[in-house]
Length: 330
Image 1: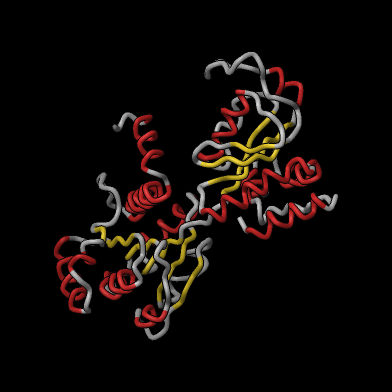
Image 2: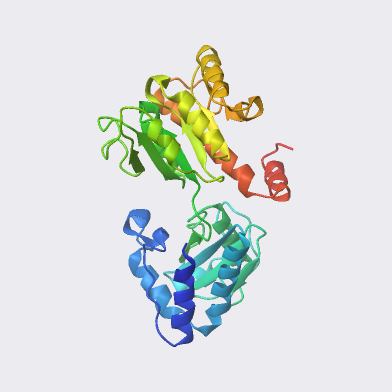
């Protein structure tokens, strides 16, 4: 989410103009994201924009403050397609009952919610609305069809974590698809267009190196919050990749390979000036352990680890403790 997008919405509403909400800024409403759902789509976003008033400005101002503070927060959207059903339905056959009131009203609503479950909205929400509003912290559309007459969507107010895939191997192809699907910004790097191309990496940012090697990698900056997966073809450029990741101080770096190969890489990496302490930061082998063998299986193991690293990085100790308790993993 871009800060200027929210600032423009506030300015338009304050001036009495209808803000133009774009699916580029709110992709949860795009045709791709809403395919097959008859109740939500790009036209829904336009209707939400037309319904905004000055009473909604504090919601967007709270969103700006969250972005300034680096808060883990979302803009949520209550989408009503049958007002009578939304307000009348208080229960279903599976979930518990949330009082004697269904949705608080039959109107669309934009609201703010963060990981601390603070909710800011222009109107009061019913207990059942609050239950579903809090679920925006779990993704763009969790539990959105539990009750008749309405659905829910959300957009994060924080950026995507960048994942560098160093090497356009078959495993990297599979990782790229899964990592993008779970919300990472994927950057694939290689020197051979036969392997690094739009057909193999359609959704990734692609960086083509020159010279038939990874030497140019040294001239490219990575950020401390980035993740790096060392997946070079034939492991030929694993040492250069590890050195680059460690010199850039990335948050996470993992490398594929067996113990024998990793011992050789260790010697080359340390020989390049990397300390033993930094070498120990390299997760090897990369990915969670559950018997994965094929490139697709390895990708599941790797991306599952990336999700876990992101979870531990983003959420406070208190929030993680609550979640671990809910999973029975105290």
